[in-house]
Amino acid sequence: MKSELVEINGAQIYHEVRGSGPPLLLIVGLTGDAGWFQPLSETLAESFTVVTYDRRGNSRSPRPQCWTSTSIAEQADDAAALLSDLRLDPALVFGNSLGAVIALELLVRHPGVARRTIAHEPALYSLFPCAQDLTGFWQAKVATGGPRYAMTVLTGMNEDDVIPGLDPELVHRVFSNSETLFSMEMPPPLDYAPDVKAVSGFGPPIIVAAGAETTMFYYGASRWLAYELGTDLCELPGDHTGFADRPEGFAAALTPLLEK
Image (tube, rainbow, N blue to C red; front, side, top):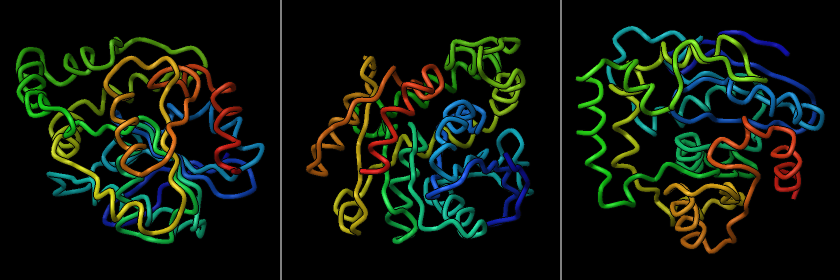
């Protein structure tokens, strides 16, 4: 595994590259840390050149000076710039949750960067009538106990937790991202709606996936997107974080979709 910081799009981005073969970019969702993909990427590295990264201002990617807001567009530009800097575009792209939303925007803003896109349980909060209520809900949690308390509510984790199979420092890094998450990263997806016509008009195949055990609204968002794109909804092992909970089974199910 090779890791380094690169200066792209006005930010320093920490990234890791594993394996050899067709390039594959994995885009993480809220909490912003590439460590969630470590076991999955190690398995996929047997067949692909796997790129993971901490999104800007998260974990090992330092917060840029004077950076006070972000957008789905900015996040997509970061992904495109990273692939270009590594000379790995066009690439296969897999995104989970907010990462799936970023992957969809990547198709619109940077045609040709993605050879195939897999959107796993996209965080399309704007589809639901109560989406804007989430702003007040999380503001109240932050006001009650601060961003780290709100992170506990969001993730169900405590700051001293260690998740088997993952980097022991991962949860600590995730909690260090709490202020960025609630002040900057949570608002953009609440208003974001994908331009389905534009997304489907650029040619590269789009595969929409959801966890076979997902019972949250993410499954509904995935089903809606698959319908709008006129494609089938694929099921992958586990739930919203199946890639971290069951990396080997997830990789075995994901690989045929990447090679399809």
